[in-house]
Every structure is written in structure tokens, then in C-alpha cells.
Image (cartoon, rainbow, N blue to C red; front, side, top):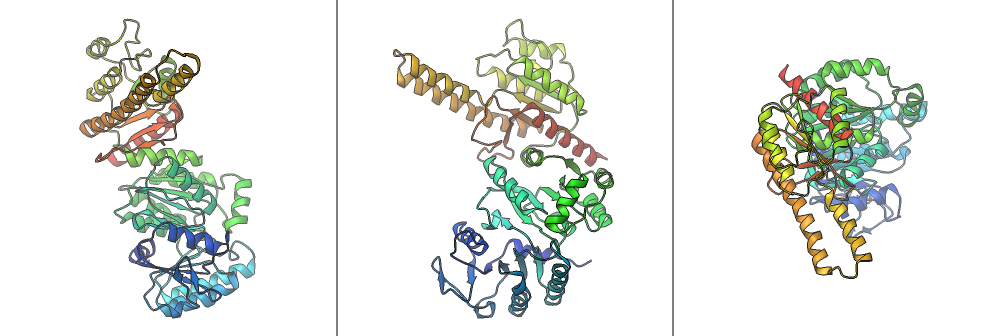
Length: 489
């Protein structure tokens, strides 16, 4: 087995980048990738290569790779397939460490394309070039401010690594991750995986200190045994979450047509993942849900859940979902019923879930959450409806402004500001409680918000996480609890 770790480090964290086929023609791959790198403020040296240009975005353009006067760590190639062997030969002559080959027209097409793919792989091996792709939409490395994809999403720096055999799906998920405030350590569109496979990425990420969680979108695994052995080892220190495409006959045909891969039987793949303890998801958004939870919260030490809800119905739905996914909702002891009950009307639920019966006392939710965290009878807490109330307050204030001529604008402004400030304080306090008790608190927002699922707190070791539905919170917590059990074993 060849160790590719040090070479991939230079690929994802280069000091210099050349873009072969860089262009100013709007919408061409050479323009999309090149403009993203420049606009993303990559701090290293950037060298556009195009024999038809002299200057692009204020940077000198070189006719050939060999004309660049400095060492090149990474080359991103966007030129047509027929030109690629010559370009790679030039990269080898220049001593380039890695190539991201955006170009399609290789193994995903026909026999001629497969032969050309084998040719370029042989060339790269001879020149000790690490080849990502071909047929990829690029890579991202937020820790190095390298944004080299066709879509211009720039997620915040974080600890979630994402490798995708589909560029389009990968870029969509990265865009969603950015909107949900999920921090990314790196993204690789692995494309056809002509040289570097998902197993190689796992081996690299195992030793990557920036990556705490590994998420994969896979359609095919060339070496199932190597994947099992590697995933089994890596998953002991870093959780792996997999979304598998090609689970049906129709999906397998579609995978073969766009990456040239032929997926194996889904039942066998799932058995391999279960053996390795890998978390399997069925939907792209579920991949994001788990990414938010694993990267932002402490792991639960067991499967017992305390539930705090602003209204009764949500508590019922959440308790059902917990039981259906192997999580326990234990009854409250009398001492806790008395402790929480001092702050609530006599008609509250007097049990778990803790129904706050729509209280407007802003301190009660935090008291209830901390009481549950302090109790050794639960390992985690799900809090429903506390965050998101500010959106409802804003709607109420808006209606009041429209219908009440006596309403004082300054008073309404102050009420809205108070509601927003309370939400900020609540999230800060939740993060402090998680750090004190080392138990996760998963929130469910009362209303949709443009602030994202993950709410970071300056200086906090963890972040607040607030899902849009109880099912998302429970599904994430169940996966985290399963991973914690795996570590115990």
C-alpha cells in the first residue's frame, strides 16, 4: 500500500495553485474555478495558464506550465480530454504534487474514454502525481481558504470532511451546509476515482487533525475488503456517515451513466457498514443533520433522553420517535417533579416529557433543561420550541403595528430586541450547560429561521444545534448514541 497522506496534505493545503485553462469567458469551467479561487482570497500564489491570454483578473497568464518560475503544489486542469496527457506530462516535468482533473470524457463514457483514463493514471503514477478525478467538480479546503469548485459556496471553517463521488450532489450539500452554519474541514469531489479512491481519502482523513467527522456520498466501492478494514479502524476515532447512491436497479444504472461506476448489491454494502459501525443515511438532508450533531455536540453516554417542550403535542411525537429508534424516555422521580413543578401551573405534565404548557416565564425553560442535565437518569436532552419564538414575536409585532394605532413604535421595537436578546442568551446558556455536564442538548426550532441549524457561541467548545423537526433531532441523537455504544465496545 502506497502512503499518499503527505502528498494529499499538499493537495488540500497547497502553497501555490496553477489553473490550466483559466479563462475570463463567463460560465466556462476555467472561469468558474479560477474566479472562485481568486474571489475566495486564496493566500498562496495563483498561476493562470492559457496560451491565448496574457492577463486575467490582474494576474499574469502563462502559456505553459513549464514557463511558471516557481514551484507548483497543485494544478487544476479544465482543458478538453484530448489535451490532458500533454498537460499532465508538463505537470510531471514541473514537479507538480497533485492534479484536480475537472475534465470529463474518460471512464464514464466509452471504451476509448476508459483507455484514455488508464493512460493518464499510468502517466501520473510514473511522475508521482496524485490525481483527483477525472470528471470532478473540484475541491474545497476552508482551513487554507482554497475554494476550487464550479459553484461558489464558501462554508465556514469547521471539522466536517465530505467526500462525494457525485460533484453535483456534493456541491449542493456544501451549499446547504453553508446556509446551515455547518463548518467544513474539506470537500473532495472524487469523480471517477481513477487513482485516489474513497479508501485513500479515509486513510488521509484518519490523520487529518482538522477533521473530526467524515461524511461520504458513495455509488461504488472498488475494493470492499479494503473499505471494511479501513472504515473499521478509522471509525474508532472519527465517526463515518455514509449516504449510498445506487440502492436500486434504477439508481445503479444512473450511477453507471454519470461516473462509470457499477454499484454492488445494496444489502451487502449495508452489512459491511454495520460490521464497521458506519452510520448509514438514506437522504442528503439526513447527512447534514448528522454532520451538525456530531460536529457540534458532546456524545451521549447512553440512550436515555429527557424532553422539554413548550407544548404537549411535540413532546408526544418526540417520545414516540425516541422509542421507535431505540432511545428511552424514563419517568421523572418525585424529587424532580417537585423541583420543576414549583415554576409551573398545577396542570403541567408532571413527567417526561416536561410540558412547559406555553409558559411566558423566560427562566423556566433553562431551569427545566438544567434540572434534566443534572439528573443522572438521562444522558441527553431534546428541547422543543424555545428557540424560534422570536420569529413568532416578530409576526405578532408586525400585525400589531398594522392594526393598533395606539401602539408605540419604540415599545414594539424594544420588545422585538428583547426577544432576540433572550434567544442569544438562551443559546449561550445551553452551550455552557453542555460543557458543564458533558451531555448533548438538541433543539427543535419553533419556526423556520435564516440563522441556520448550528448556532456557534464565541469561545464555546460546543455549539447550539436547532433542527426544524423532532424527527431530525431524534434521528441524529439515535446515531450519536449508537456511535457511543460502538466506542464502548
